Length: 171
Image (cartoon, rainbow, N blue to C red; front, side, top):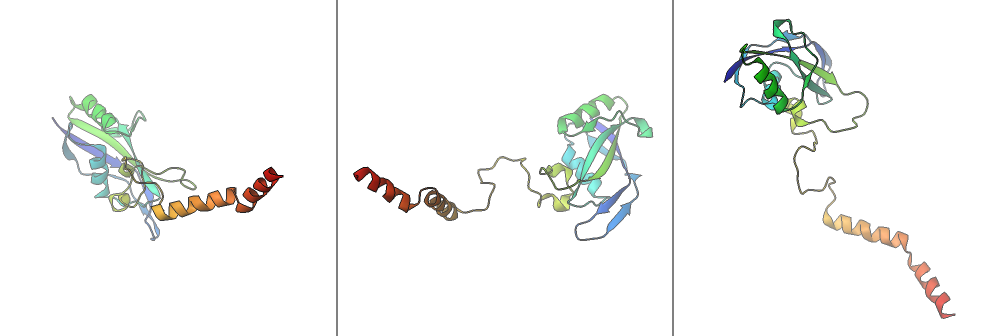
């Protein structure tokens, strides 16, 4: 079933990487017709990114909005399931209203942002835990890792202490 998706982006300061801080006036984006069963949060963020730019130290949040007043019941949309639920609640009206807000990360990052909250131009540069991989989180190769283990063992059990123990046993 197709729905008319109406997105309002609130005003914000864009912190482009390596660029100056710039004011982005909020506005309602062109209405987009979407299939409620195949449209997901990542596609929604990509649609917004076609019209607005935000930096890697910023993320987007999506909120339910009621009618064309864009007032909302302050329920955040974080997952595809929550987006589908919002579509289901509005399928009789044939219009779905969503508020989008660009936020700055405050202080040092304590977590990795999810890819779906990042602008597409920085999405591939952001480390995430969204996919399971067999790779280790560090970039140390196996040879370096083995060398570090040997050094740690040597520090923990220096050879001189072993000799002293052996001498004490003989006496």
